[in-house]
Figure 1 (tube, rainbow, N blue to C red):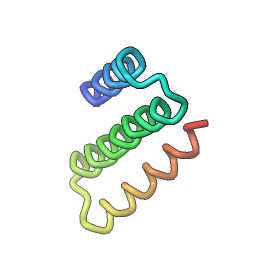
Figure 2 (cartoon, helix red, strand yellow; figure 1 turned 90 degrees about the vertical axis):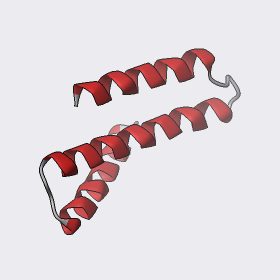
Figure 3 (cartoon, one colour; figure 1 turned 135 degrees about the vertical axis):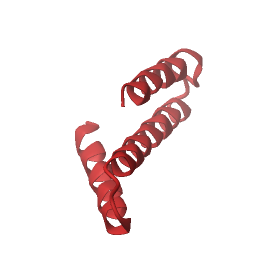
Length: 72
């Protein structure tokens, strides 16, 4: 989990430094990184707790909802 956090912070910093400064491109690239990090955390949590197929689906859905609620 610590590796995912460090990679997420590094990816967001790289997008901020080298990414597009356009009004749409910058926001879209930042959101792409956010979605990928959110999926990585959901997959890691489901895999590490050895959940079944339904658990994976519920975990991905819960992570997506929590991520989108915490975003603003």
